[in-house]
Length: 284
Image (cartoon, rainbow, N blue to C red; front, side, top):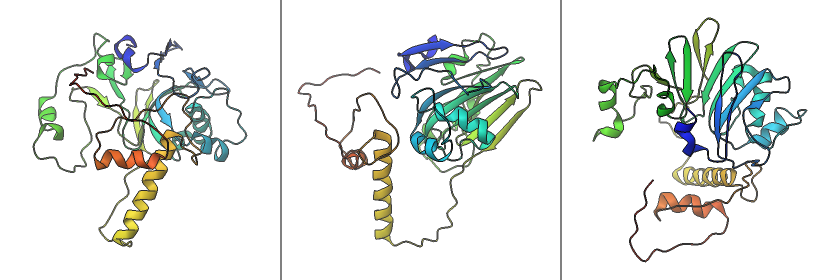
């Protein structure tokens, strides 16, 4: 399964077999490249965690939520195991970032799967007999010969990205494959490996808006500009940010339009432009 998603993590690979659970991880080392390998364990070894993504406010969480804990790694995801031990299913309530998490709770014998608030990082899972397989891409699940792989055409053809009339919908996102589930954005899915039961906890939802605005247009613009600048600083480790620390170079690939120039101009760091004189083709 790890080989199927090897392109997602060229900097390291590890598989850990622990009783009924075998988490495997491919690493792209951005934070703590020399001391942040996964899986990550809690101090007492009762919690095993692998995570894809970044926790932007890990330093704030260290100070405010677990000030008495000495982290053993420099990984920004290291705070998650300690938060889970202390706060249970509420461990993501104050976490800001983009992430997909798989956590093995040895004491409760539960598998915990979770995604960030907007579902930026993908996470799929499927039941295969008395087993559960999960991964960042569906093709990792398909490495199991018995994983369901029949396309749900009714759902797939109704997908907004395939229609000429996109619309806002409260319907849950789907994988397009019958029997392959997506962990919902802003949710924690817990699977009891003893009973086989599955529960879902929504730790965050998009706030409701009744259409009544208390701010003027100018105040909205100012508030949006401040939030955008703060978000860019947090993600890119710009001076003034107390959050994510990336020990690798940061590149910006932009189109030059407003939606691209806004984040770049708000980042505050220097850069340079590369011009290409002849047409080129880039394959991804």
